[in-house]
Length: 477
Image (cartoon, rainbow, N blue to C red; front, top):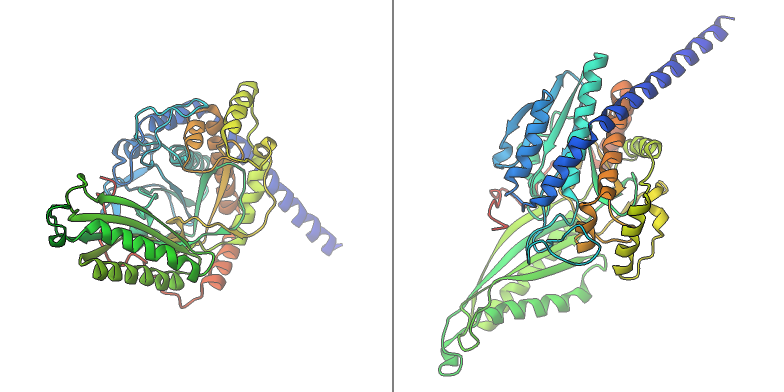
């Protein structure tokens, strides 16, 4: 009889906890919907004024003002980054951080219409949806703050305003400064063309600018007196392209010629610059591949009689997946559901879809959550460095039409529509609900920490790929 009573008592407590959790989530979801208009307004303002990495002064300020108004304390300009900040509320543990990005991409200006028409020719645009990334994460932090306040639950919520994800490695400098060290859990999300909370990893990445210096001269009258810096760049690119056959097949190498190269064909170019990204799934092997790229640059300079110097611009580690934490996000994302189009949105989506190259995903994919599996994506993110410091997990919501690639005009176009705003609100709800679960049941946190240490190792010492360089605050200028 006593044993039966204990079991019944346990079940009563368990189901009471579940009921209380559901009630909390319903209230949090209602709060987010009640304030949706403000979040959409700010997201569209950031979309209308796309700012490049480390130059996101207005975007950062809008998010800071939003969080300060809600009672968060704000630390500005952290880690020597003018647009980075931390907004904090609460006291004690657990300490949960939610990351938000807000930088745009160059050359992706686009109107919110289903045909390729830039707002400003060669202007910037939010091709990765960071305008809703930052606002959605801030909205989640605010709703968690209200829940902590109303329930009197012990804990701290922190919002990390992280600039220059697109090639500037903003989070790496924040990690290097120890700003994530006091967290128990770090959460994030990202706009995409599907809905997923799978435990995924990424490629590590190192980027560098190779600058060649030669000697200018008359290309016809005195060609023997000149040494072409552009020849150095082209020779390097040729050798690296040949090298692709002799690196691990998962390697990604891409480049753009960013500076110099001459203006007049009859003047031998004295300056030229090429900007490289090199990616691979293992950080140590990545650096071996990168050194071969450096050797190609040195050989190109030697063969063309020019001089070469290079500067590492950024570098990020792979994302360390956490299945235990991802399962919580997956459960809550399924509770929230996918993005449901109204008739106007369906018409817009069909027009975007018609412009895509061989889209394989069905339109209905926006409404569903992908099956829970672990996988690797070939892209890179500075979230990776955070994930080696604290248990980290993220989710994605369908802000773009299924089949839309990131960094495309179609992604920018969708970002200015109600489709992206629905995805933003879904992400805010899923992050909020997951944080509530973690605060209410700290066993989840312990499981995530246990897995984190097993995957990373207890003797791991963090070393940033970009070394001790100062932040390249002018890399987009």
